[in-house]
Image (cartoon, rainbow, N blue to C red; front, top):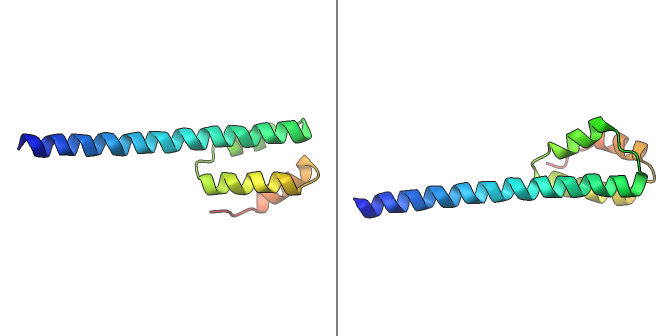
Length: 87
């Protein structure tokens, strides 16, 4: 009985750790995307900044990063951003 409880606790810990790691990774990636935009275009609209920072899907964030490399202005990025569907 005690062994089963220990296994359940260990599993819960590992799941919680994995979720926390994924959330932290996505947060850091989102911050890097915003920094890339800042470095490339200087002025990033606050609404865009907040939308990117609230994104939790790493594949979507990777898509944003790829978009940054292909646009010539923040306005072009905003236009593509509003039409994007990376999920």
